[in-house]
Image (cartoon, rainbow, N blue to C red; front, side):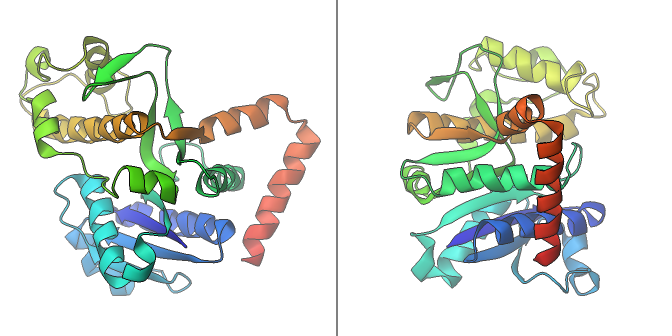
Amino acid sequence: MVFGILVAYSDDYFENSLHEFNSILRMLSRKHKLIVVFNSNTLASKYDLLPVESSDFDFVLGTNQMHEFSGWSEGLEFVKHKYNNLFNNSSYIFANDTLCHHRKFTYFHRLIFTIASYFALSAKKPKIAGEIHSNGNHFSYNNVKFDCWISSYFFAINNHAMHLIEFNILPQKELINYYLLGGHDERYFFSEALDKYLKTHILNNLFHGGWYKSQPLDESNKDFFYVKARSILAEFSLSSKAHSNKIEFVDTHFLNKLFHKWIPVKIKNLVISLAVGSTKRL
């Protein structure tokens, strides 16, 4: 069984992300179940008005205490209680509703996500699939040294890996607070405990143009960036767990680059047309 847990916030994003995530699950496995965690009370209150007639899913009202990470954790708790006989022996795919937003996403990307997830979930070794980032520099986080990390807008974890991380997606608050101080001065936004290279990387993303919502830190936006930084550190917490447990990565972005670089145009078009055809038959 494959459980897909989608965390939703936005009216504008929900319909498309639900459709794309559900399509990936359906292409991946006949035995699957979709769980939607509403991390917005406003969105949850509109549930009866949402265009979801063609999608079968259970839904959970999330607390949004740690954004998508608390949502995924609450989704896992829901599965544990409602599908207790399947919980320990299943694989899991996690996503938030930016899955098909803020980046190029086509039928082809849906297919690549599905293939990468299949490689991870069907493996006999512990694996996790998603978009992997690295620039060749090693750094330490939570006493684990590594040089690549996984984006958390979409990732798939097989059953072997879930047991190694003890089904625990949520980072410890104490760990986040150890590294993140907050405030309106970027010099003291993170503690001295955070690896210097990693600190420079995150500061650049947040305040110096690395992220599409990047802007200089000040009194007016400090709370917004504190929340974003907390989510970034949660991503590194997940990756540190994967590395410490020797969980292998399957990079969806690598498959995407490989396809575009080496596959002839005629074959690319054929693959995309097959992906479109398979979607229409679902």
